[in-house]
Every structure is written in C-alpha cells, then in structure tokens.
Length: 404
Image (cartoon, rainbow, N blue to C red):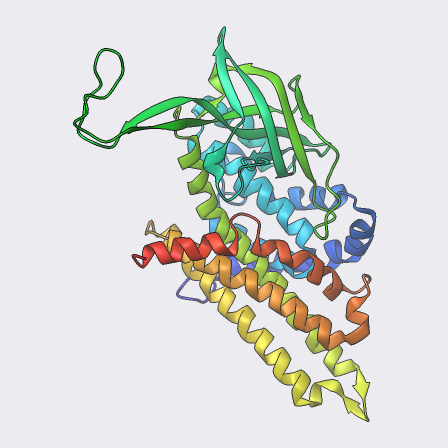
C-alpha cells in the first residue's frame, strides 16, 4: 500500500477475490442463509485460492502475504456475504493467528500448515456466559495433573467451533492466582500484612491452551438460532474434564489474557475491513436499484431524497475504508495501532449498520424480503457493532488514549 492507493499486487488480489465473491459466493448465499447451512463448497474454493494462508509465511504453508492482504479479501467477501467473510476472518485472525504469534516452533509446525491450507478450521475460545466485554471474568479453569491440563468450563459464541473441518479451539482458562501488593506493607510469616501498606489484591492467572476438537470431554453444543450470519458456524462449548498435554500451553503461562487482547487489536482491523465491504455492498446495490426502479415517471435515483441518502452511504463506506487502511498501515509499519484499530472497527461497524438501514429504505418493501441481499445485510450488520469488542468498548479505548 502506497499512501491510500493500492499497489498492483494488492489490487490484483482484491480483484481476484471480488470475482470469487461475485461468481462463486453470491449465487449460493441466499440458499445457505435460508437453510442455516455452512458453505463447505465455498470454503473449499477459498482454501484452494490460498485465502486462509494469506498472512502466514510460506514455511508454514502460507502465501507469504500480510495482514492487509487478508483485510482486502475480507472487504470483497463482506460485500456479498458476511457469513463467508467472518468464516475466513475467524479462521485466520482468531483461529490460526494465536498459534503463529505465540506458539512454539513445534506447535506451529503441527497446526499452521493445515490451518493455512483451509483444510482445517480453528476457533478462539474467549467469551463465556459471564465474561464478554469483561473477559477478565473468565471462570473456565485448568489444573495440572500428571503432565496434563485438566480443563472444565463453558464458552459462548465461538465461531468455527463445530464444523466438520474444525480441528482446534484455543481456550482461555484460569490456571492459578497471582497476588498483587498495592502498598508498601510486607506479609508476615502468616501471610498477613504488617499494616504499613494497602490491602493485597488477588488476580486470576489466565493462560491459553490448545484443545484439539476431538479431545474427550470437548463438546460443541447445539448451534445458535441467530438473527444474522446464518451460514456462519457458531456454538456454545462445554469442556468437561478435558485432558490435553502440558505442552499444549500456548505462550507464556499467565499471559493468556494479554495475548488474546493483542489478537483482538489485530482482529478489529479485519472486522473493520469486513464491515467496510458490507457498507460498500449496500451502496452498490442501492445505486443499481435506484437506476432501475421507476416511480412517478422517472428513476427513483433522480429524486434527491434517494440520491442524497445513497451519497451519504458512499461517504460512510469511504470513511470506513480510510480508517482501516490507516490502522493496517500503522500495524505493518510496527507503529502503535490499538487506538486506530478501535476507531476503524467502530466507524466501519456503524457504517455497515447505517448503510444497511438506508439501503432497506431505498428498496422499500423489497428491502424487507429475505431474498434481497440488502435484507440479509440488515440482519447481518448489527453484530458488527457487538462482536470482537462492542462499540462501547471501542469508545472506552479511544477515550483512554485521550487521557479520560
């Protein structure tokens, strides 16, 4: 990327994925949405194109690209089918990326080639019934016993966790406690404070552990009946006395929560790209419809009430694209990007939802019929203001950066 113009290589990738989206994904999207079925045939073609390996080195079976390449692919897929786009996003950014960022060489060699090839999918087991935005409220726990982690707990809203090709879920679990001393007092021999300092606080030690999906005790429960993203695989998970080798610890013990937060920072760029695609898809559909639909003797696009609405939609999509381009450029340059990623995720998520609402209005009654893509965008886009960090969480991060 040079400034905000794509290099020839990036543009070629974007065009190639756009063709796939229009000619392979779009024709079957309504069917899978209606049937709530996972698009295995589409995922297979995406895998053959190397999309699941885009940001990974060739030595691990990847395409040797970068995170921005992944974002461009997600934008093009998000135009026509958010379920397909989130399958790729979660498979790469949330499923495989933790292994690449924090895994040992042995873990990378074992898992990355199959995940980068798209022949297998992995999930990201962070959210729990009582730990969403407050991920520090994790209750799933793991104890060491005879060289194995024994894991018990529940996870919620886990993407790609129950497909026929799901092979791995990385889970956060409490593996102990850490005492933090806030004052200057010291503990005496009984573990009590000497009175010179403030009260001790106890923190959960949260670690991440690789759990193969065929491990006894690991169960993907019945899939959710969702408002949108109906072709995306999403399940609650139950882990009951799940035993995996001690070597399945991913990254440093006690750093699991921090490591997952860094994964989410990157993931917000990917979600922003997906949301930008959804916002642009609504623009494209609305422009086409406004040129074809006639009312009171002329194309409805000739009326300012319609044309101005679509113009605002284009402005939102353009702004969202600039925001995620900027965050991605900072990330690739090794610069701080947490705040820019939060801004991009918030702006793009809101653009997708606002554009879906306005596109439905442009289409009138047809916009309320599920066979029209704008209706699917209307149902799909709301989760973009919730998943991988709510809008409120993004505002919190931005405000914190401002010193508030």
